[in-house]
Length: 471
Image (tube, rainbow, N blue to C red):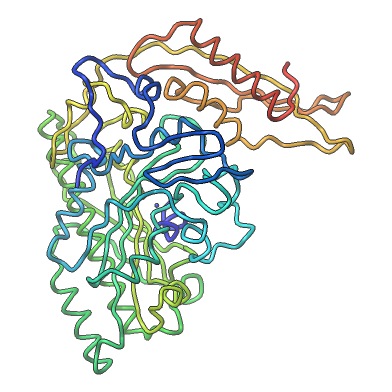
């Protein structure tokens, strides 16, 4: 559940496999060729075979649509796909269905309504979400499929993995498309003749989870700050939570011990590689689970937040026709963990089609990325006065809207965008902002002329779309 994943952690191969020639083929070149999975015509968008009539809500840009169908998580030789496989393989035979091919174009109802998002929730805004039209969008979390999976899954549990889309800031760790994995496990009370039989089955399921050699610092739940739900007994909470924690510990063990092996093979002699893996549980709050926790991993001398989870709230179960059931759920973001484990310095690299990147990774192996070059960057500042209404009220510019203009004009040639200065003129009362844009390619040198063209286009669109006054 990924809101269960937006809140829980902000949390087959490529069926439309791209044919890449043996020469260097960059992401920018791919965008020029367009995506085989999307088509844009006047008044219509076609995404993965489904055509949508555009309207005033449509804000999914050609660049974002070009990334739909890349399915990095389904590529067995890509860091995201390798990480997905390592996790899923560890849970084979333990009662889970693995969903990896659920399409990202979903309805507003699936993404928000069925999960109980308030109508005024910020996640619904056009500044946060890519809409195809007022009724359809690119999923912002894999929880968009939670309702469907709860209703149709034939095993006690499931894992969902997929690409999700959010308008976001631009830097080395943020990208408008990223990948989530979520999982859930359900016990239906009606399937058991008695409470004792139910509890015995949960204990049996706990005992079936393979043991790890993790050093675990556990924690219970605060009855006031992190209380259990009334519909679950204390013994149910205890057993369901045990099953949840042992499951997540198994996930962590599978991923991070494999990463240790990779680091040793790469020649690292850091002390942590010879120590048992340590984890700790900390209490947390998420709207869709109670009680809730996060697991942290001691990695390279610091605690790394890894995964949010908890016992599923009754409202979520009721909305999925599981009104007499108990369950847990977790959510994890794959990209940042993959960056850490594979030693990848910039999230844009995941989307590169450069053979120097692609050829470094092999199925079922964590290997440390070897940088092939460092191309120089070029910075530009854009300064402007924010507009005011006729009544003199300031018209704010949402940062995500500015980021989207930069991203659409520069694509993966922009490394970062930062607000570097903001002030109010003491005499005129005008509100000024300055953003610094760092243009830098991962694959080649870019010229000042190229940068100037992209930057000028961004300046023009800021004036045209938001009425700013350039300084």
